Image (cartoon, rainbow, N blue to C red; front, side, top):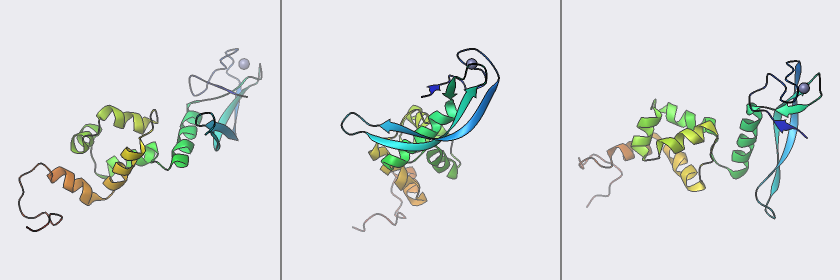
Length: 153
Ligand SMILES: [Zn+2]
């Protein structure tokens, strides 16, 4: 059993010792609500205090567990979402402006503080195709007859 450290590590939360050893370990953790919970696995860095033997994990473990949950749910990971935005060289504010996704939500997804819903994940998936981003950018512009996706009437 390990406890979470508030900071990625450098002093023991119990005895304040700085004599810590780190090791990688496969961790199993439950995910979901009672009755529908599953056990997920991920690799985490575990710190052990030389002086009091207290063991704990840090913020990188929180991130690793979050990625495992994303993989389990089949939604994009924080890094994939950031890469998507950066693929278009857009700031969060600009990406939010084009997609109408809330900038705060985007920030939380990229930080791994919040999971995108499956609907948002589908939306993000479609945005990986540049033509879809272009469609959004052009959506509220006057029709110029050049949009190949519009039906001819
Ligand atoms: Zn200690």
